[in-house]
Length: 246
Length: 148
Picture 1 (spheres, rainbow over the protein chains, first blue to last red):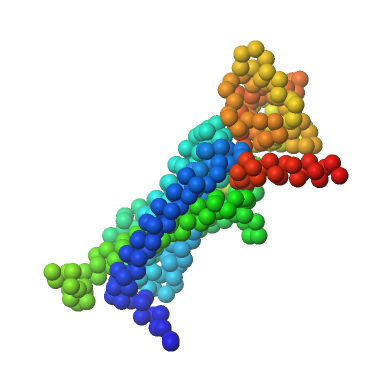
Picture 2 (picture 1 turned 90 degrees about the horizontal axis):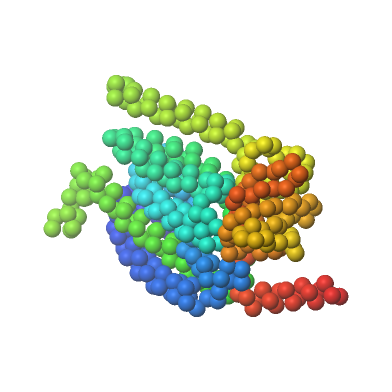
């Protein structure tokens, strides 16, 4: 069966599709969060070096991974919007930014809460922490730039440039702990090596990672529906929507 | 598409912003070229790569059997990178994860005798996570390997 993917690049079709997918993502995400938090905080054994304080890992690492991943997705959508001049991709980029910023903020905040009991400090200006802070500023800059330009299409293009330029920061974040001496430990997850030597720890981490990812998907899809409605409010198909006529 | 004053203004703002950002990133990278690393290793300090006469950080492992406590909170220990080792003196509360053989980053000043006077000691932990039993098993396996 051939699926016509281009059909879903039209805001009018994607609006309905997003509305169908989002509740599933949210529901599964809630279940995974509950299971992941239970296994991570109650079932998983303590860590040999860090004792109980390592458990913040189960929130810190998934949010940190997604903060970088969502930025690349956002920059990807921004680039597609810039090159092919498609409306929906720019809307997706705009919808991704607040969730990416939220994950970056949580990663920084939980990192500080983790750093105090283990390292002995809330914050240190090492390469990993500083580049992750720059990521937060890039998200905020993207949103600020987008909302400071009145014409949405023009705003899309300007913000897209910022997103694309800023994406050089993502590999800097990932490799910062290898390129420079840092207080932050090296990568736990690499190609061919996962430095978590306990099955329940791995399970809790994977559950939390998928929970965060599905949460992001649900929230972004709901947000993009609002953006579509706002931008297409003068069109015929929006006027004919059940929820608009009611 | 004619350039209205508003369009022109926006265009200049974007171009200006890009130019400012380009210059800023360039300057930051240039300024940080040597400073992005958080600490120097003891070997770098011995090779005179560390700045003299001002605060800097050294990092490495706390050398085994080097911790000596004096009266009060004063403590002596050595930071090693397995090639060179550097004596450190510190007065204050040490982080919980400060242990012999574990990672540490200390900030302070080097005196003329080669003793490092630290005013901040931070513990650096590694990226491995395992329950205590797994670590014990790992240690036993390593000892058995070493005994062969």
